[in-house]
Image 1 (tube, rainbow, N blue to C red):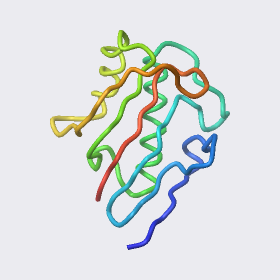
Image 2: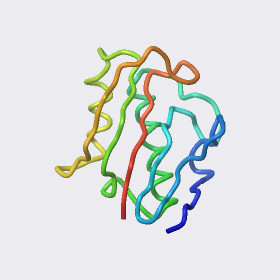
Image 3: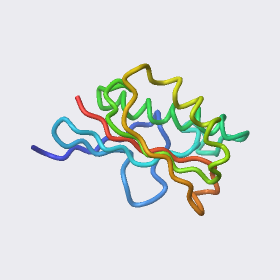
Length: 126
């Protein structure tokens, strides 16, 4: 098996020494995504739901670049600045999955890149 780097202009460019995703065999490991608009490179302004929607759009673009979609997601990790916003993020996140939602954990953190409210990473497989 060989490692394949996945990067797409339909999702924000990495802001550090990493790639949007790495595919190894049938597994796809997507780096944490924040609410950056790929067209402008600017943070999406608004509440935590606006951020979560942009994060999910970014994740969707990366999955698509690897020939996958949300039905391929096995595991998600959600990082929140405020666990009090769990329900709002969960509403947006849940709208992308049916009954076969992936495994997941949600963690409150002390800080996230660029001061965002939410970051999500995923593992998917074909």
